[in-house]
Image (tube, rainbow, N blue to C red; front, side, top):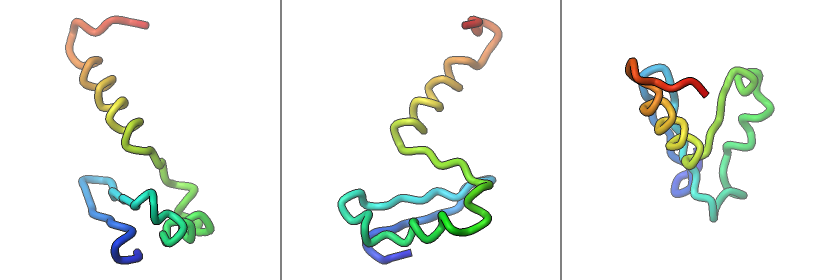
Length: 67
């Protein structure tokens, strides 16, 4: 990770990674693409992540509607 550009922290079964968009050219995240582990990852931006959470929260419970 490049200080001032990249941040990473562990969660339960996940690793969270943040990068300053304005400094994306300086990020070391691009080196990850060449690693075999990259194929095992799912990467989402913050907007998609929060939308997925909304969908999951709305889908919980017995009153769930089918699409």
